[in-house]
Image 1 (tube, one colour):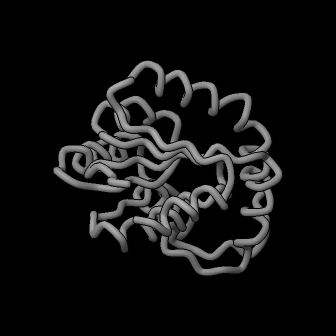
Image 2 (cartoon, helix red, strand yellow):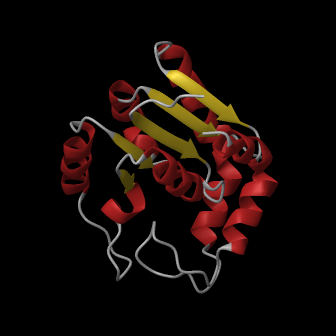
Length: 164
């Protein structure tokens, strides 16, 4: 199955967006941008919204990219510019397991190693299905020209990426 050249990967924290994005980057050679690396600094502070928006806009103007990250405030600008949407629409349980399993592990998508479970992240996972998920489905309907891949669990996503 062919992918586009401007791909956004959306999903709840812990769904494996960054892992899928890295594997997709290996298979396609497209440049990969993690929104967490744009937003966060190593000291766990972040840049201003204006600076973040400028950096994101610069990426969106490029011919090719994979953008990994949820950042609901930026859904629509990314939908406008992408040709492919990959949505990891996983259960709360699967995402909660994902955020628990990554504690203590070094990751290339965020500039620090989480040493303990972040209560704010737990709350984001709990709220995601009711708050973010409906917005994503609305945008999928609003932009019918986009290629959309929706995976309901890691097995489905793994099966898809394995045949690229």
